Image (tube, rainbow, N blue to C red; front, side, top):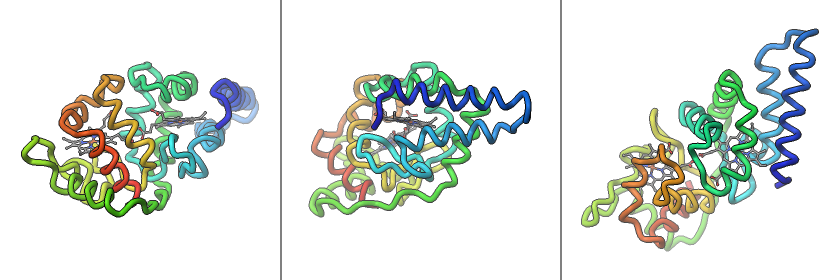
Length: 206
Ligand code: HEC
Ligand code: HEC
């Protein structure tokens, strides 16, 4: 991962360069989106399939979820450490049409393939994901995120996502750093740390 400052400069350069040609060539918004994607790829991977455990894949993610996250970064509402370090600066440069174009692009890319992990953890995670833990009031994750964690209209895709990233998010919901994750604050409040790890390992394997 290059430094956030370098990325910020690169993206600013890419968008400015586009603005500069706009006067002569009147490029469509697609040109702006294409240049931005080039910068995103340096961290999020080719077509949004990330190879870095702390950086989420974007390929196949739900469009409306992506739009909401990019706007939450831009308004500095979503505030985990990784987000503050990288996505605040980058999203500050994105206008609404570019956010929309980027989200449409990533939503239709082929998702990253899953990675198998520790079978015993995966088995525990699968049970939590599918059935919840009824005596502690943990609902089945599948009821919102879909049977195969492919995501549903209002809820993000989780299948094949890096366990490191997922685990970090599950922990961060309790810290109110994702205020629009109020639903998840409730869902994670009764999960033990070991169960968060297990469910993240299961989701990465899909
Ligand atoms: C310098 C590296 C870097 C660059 C460049 C970068 N990102 Fe990110 N992005 C991150 C990191 C790190 C996270 C995870 C933050 C966290 O841990 O909360 C992230 C998170 C995200 C998320 C949240 C995903 C989710 O599942 O909630 C979206 C959406 C996103 N980035 C979109 C983009 C787009 C679009 C671009 C290009 C305009 C971009 N990023 C460029 C590092 C980067
Ligand atoms: C009642 C619906 C609901 C249930 C049940 C639910 N979720 Fe979520 N989940 C959401 C919503 C809504 C979001 C988006 C939050 C946001 O916008 O910040 C989300 C986001 C997430 C994210 C962040 C994804 C990312 O890319 O950053 C993870 C991880 C997650 N959920 C895991 C789980 C797990 C594991 C369970 C089961 C223990 C679960 N969810 C149960 C609604 C739900």
